[in-house]
Length: 296
Image (cartoon, rainbow, N blue to C red; front, side, top):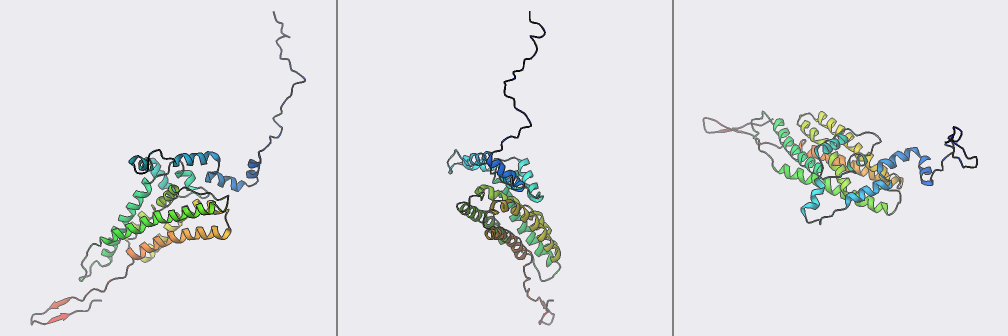
C-alpha cells in the first residue's frame, strides 16, 4: 500500500520551466501594427486581415450564371432589420467607424439602394409639383398642370448618379490599387450600397423642401450634405489615404463635389425654378370692347 510520502508530487529539478513573466515574441507584422495604434483601428475597420478578404471573396462568388434569376436573387437576400440598421448607420454616422465594415461587408445588397432611389425619385417629383402649386396658389391666372416629366428626369438623374459614379470610383480604386500596394479596393457592389444608403437622408429633406422659404431649403441642403457626405468621407478616405496626398485629397473632394451637385441641382431644378411669365387675363366688357389687365 502506498504511503503518504509516495503520493506527494515529485518535482523534477532538471525539467524546463516556463515563466508567465517572460516576454512573448511578437511577429513582425503584428509589431509594425503596434507601432501605429491609429492605423491598427483603421485597418481593422477596413477589413484588411485575411479573414475579411476570405469573407469578401466568398461573398462575391456566384454559383448560378448571370442570366438566371437565382444570380440576382442573392443581391436582394436581406431582411428588414438589416436594411433599417443600414439606414440608421447612414443617417447617424459614427466618427471613426467605417460604414462598409460595420454594415455592408457581411452581406452587400441591392434591395435597399434600389428602393431608396425609387422612393427619392417620386418624393422629389411629387414635392416639386406641390411646391410649384403652393407658390402660385391664389393667382387667378394660374392653372395647375401636373408635370409628369419630372418623374422621368428625376429617375434618370438619381439612378445615373447611384450607378455611374460608383462604377467610376470602383474603376479608379482598382487602377490605383495596381499602382500603390496599401490602397484597399472595395467591390463594386459595396460602393453601390454606400451610395444608395447615403441618399436616404434626402427623402425627408425633399418633403421639407415644399416649405416656400429659400433660407429653410438651403439650411436643409447643408444639413443633409453634412450627414451623407460624412458617410462617404469616412468610408473612402481610409481607402485612399496611403496614396499620393494630392490624389487622395482630390478623390475625396471630387466625391463630395458630385454629391453636392446632385443635391443643389435637384433643389434648383425641381423647387427653385424661375416663374413663368403668365399671360395677362382678358376681361370682356358690355360694349364689345376688351380690357387687358397687367398682372403683377
